[in-house]
Structures are given as C-alpha cells and as structure tokens.
Image 1 (tube, helix red, strand yellow):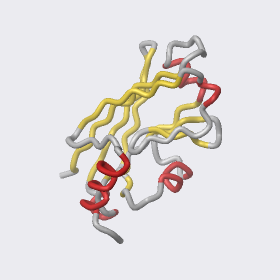
Image 2 (image 1 turned 135 degrees about the horizontal axis):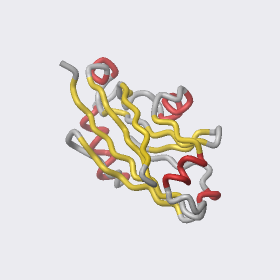
Image 3 (image 1 turned 135 degrees about the vertical axis):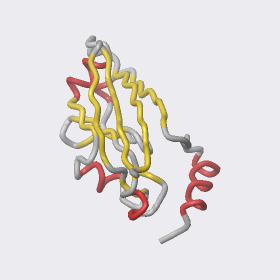
Image 4 (image 1 turned 90 degrees about the vertical axis):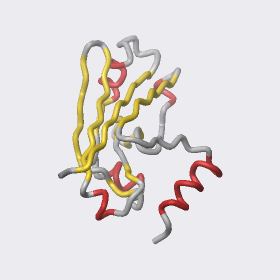
Length: 136
C-alpha cells in the first residue's frame, strides 16, 4: 500500500505540490482562455470532466477507513451566487480518474463556471473554498 507520510514528503519535495494542512483552505483557479482547457487537474480541488463540466473534490492523505470518518464542504461562486457541495473525502489511494468519473464532488457546468468568472466568457477564474472536519 505505501506510507502516507513518505508520499506527502515526496509530493512536496520532488514535485513541488502545494500541500494544505489544517481544516480549511482557499484556492483560486485562473485560466486566461477557458476554451483551451481540456484537462485541468488540481490535487485536492479541481479537474476537468469529459462532459464539458468541472468537478471539484477532495482526496485526503489517509487510508480509506480513516477518510470515511471525515466530512468536507467545497464552495465555488461569483456574481453574488455560490454552489456548495458536502461529502465524504476520498482516500488519496483512490485515483483522480476514479473520483472524477464517479462525479463524487462539486460538479460545475462550463457555462456556470464562466458565469462565476464574471460572465464575460473571456477568462475562467474560479475560487474554491474548502473545509474539512471529523465526524463525532
């Protein structure tokens, strides 16, 4: 299976992955030409699904059993509107493709993502906010 702490160190040091620790994070996603986006992948936040939609989800750096004892929320919005998803984080051991293909996350149609970006259809600019907590 592998050692999670080794994986975290490897991602930080060898791949310069921006790791988030704590129970909340804010992240902004900006793409100058949204029509060029074919497959945008963010560890823990955003991916491009093959059905012209974006999906934001969270994978947790723990095994599957421990991940099931947590809950998380994701929020994306703009233009005085927002969408919120609440779910159970997937283990880092679940592949990005497996999570994406199951649509187990906040699914945002391209037109809605562009609306959140300001509605001009010229720039894709999403702010994803997340919170994670342990269920009692």
